[in-house]
Image 1 (tube, rainbow, N blue to C red):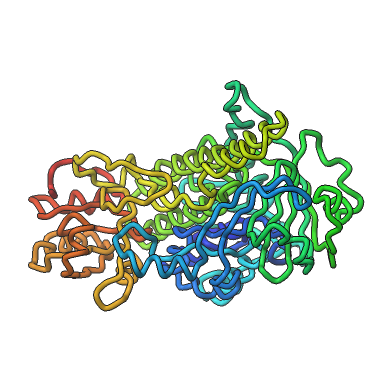
Image 2: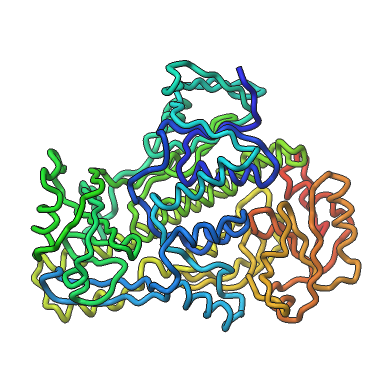
Length: 547
């Protein structure tokens, strides 16, 4: 039986992100995946700015942008009665190029350090897998099917079926990260139930069951038909959704209905044309799938040394692209905390803090996805009521684009975390569409371009970072306390007035995941208490040690 610090079950985007996060902190893992290679299904196709910030931190953002849609293409969404019908509304969203320009020109702390990126999961997974295979701390095992686990006070013994060799493998690890998707065998094995189901109906307060969905990925260069109402990334109607995946002729088509797609359409290309209402030239059908959207969340994210992430922990309709991006945040949070425990400077409260921090984010993002989906339901209802085109256009034009919610993407706050040292100030107001710069403890701090043109976030260390805008020695007691506890802290002195203004305090301690752990203008009598709190140590004294 082999032994390794962490076993990650599932090599989708979340599992590979968890493996890369562990490796970023010097921790080895075994990454086990039952499939032979990356998915051929496009699934997600929008990586939000917060996830791109994490990709940049791990050094893979540029690889992902090269594999994704070129930066010049915008993110426009068309609402219509159909390709053979009438245009109703257009949601405009800037291209990556335009977003970079906005970041440079505003530089007021409201912007992400990285723009979003269009890339399908079928294109993203090979990039992540290549990085995982190259990393000496990540042992990738494809065609390993998870069977069962036994855990005790010291670790987890996982049993796998090696499908290639026809053999049973056992691996001993200190922890197991379950990133094995919606039907997670690990989650079922440890007995963690899911809660949820349908979506509340805004019209009557009841619960609407989500319809069945059928998706087809195909190739077509019939631009005359596809763009007859103008350029688009997403094309929404009350009957179907059409998505441009790569700006090179690959498309995904999605339709929903209350009855199950059983049997599925025997001629997917003909079925697409029948719903489009135009004779679209389809060169090739790549892949099709039948699926059932759900809103579910695990009652717990942890069972002993087994922790859930991604779809194993939460499932939601893809409106707004919250699913994979929420899972990426899980992977980062879980990865740095397991690494801190394994590397010896983290305490036992780190494991409890994972659920305390990430489950509320899962619930928040599920609610946001529900809100997006309700726009579609309301549009369907208006169409069923034969509402005039002008009324439909007025309703749709008043809605923000689903992928423009930077407050949701960037401004989730770990305000109830046992690892965050609250400073007694009231929580700043939050806006779903706009990130409001703040270093309030638990929040993501503002990103800025410094006077030399570099990103402030690029100055952060791989572990903790103390941003010091005074540079007058006041940081020394906190740094000394960190040294005594073995907590790795990079001391970054930045004496720029704009940074001090937006960062609100002279000293701000930032965690490995770029969230604020503590802030203050002075260090008081007991900095060790704060260091113990942020590293999850036991016996933490809650006092006004640092102000």
